[in-house]
Image (cartoon, rainbow, N blue to C red; front, side, top):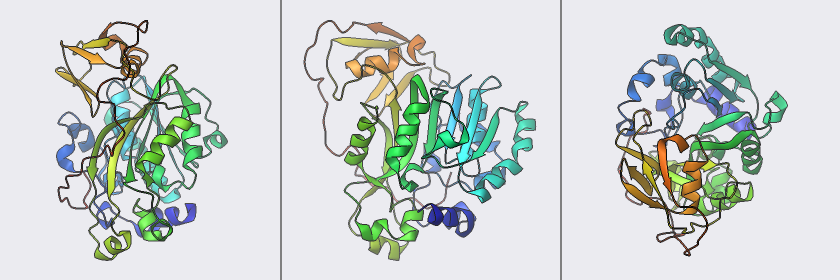
Length: 345
């Protein structure tokens, strides 16, 4: 599978328009504050972008960030602007051709930004210890439509957990299926290269994340994918695929369900670019200045992470009131499909 992916992204794909699905993100979903940062990325780097979402979580100033499967470096150069002069972004990829594009424009971006805070390394995201990455050395880890391409997703999540600092988060976009993908789809080279063959059944992903220390994965955004190529659509059959962004926190004390302790938070409106509301995930859109009831896990995610100084916290864990209302286990993705082209943002 590594060889298939290297060939597909190193040789067969030369431009994002070569993709045969709508996995690449819809430009209309790009927030206004992020568009100027994207515009500063070199055109050749942007042209070789094959992601499926936006992996730019807020409040990254001064952070040490790792991009798994960075490709030609588009997200690395966007994140470099967000972490600033005192932060650092490391991009790791296994494909020489993609890394060559990223390195070719390293000096261009350093001169444009006024500082050099990025680096790249060739390696496999299942074995990051082999390129000398130390445990608990990153504040945030991101990945954009790459985990599905890994033949050993357990090893990826194990490495992510090892590398994150306490309170750190894995914020990543990927492709998921509404059921387990059959071998006929999983073993098709093109479907695999298009990020469909390696897609996890969403519930298997949740179990996998919990098994490796991420007790409560949070869905941030999602959208159905469209397979534009008729032959590939026929091979995929009735499987529904989704592009989804999750955030996973490395925190002690998280439970595998949303438990109610009578707690609440008040957002201060102080996170840059988010003065009026802060969206932790799909079900927690927190308006500034209002008391917002939360479960124990949400309380910890905000209190024990880099977001803590931007909230006031009400309550503790001394009294338990049972399961938090609205905690469910059905398909989390939206079923409405809006036709989009295969062009990237």
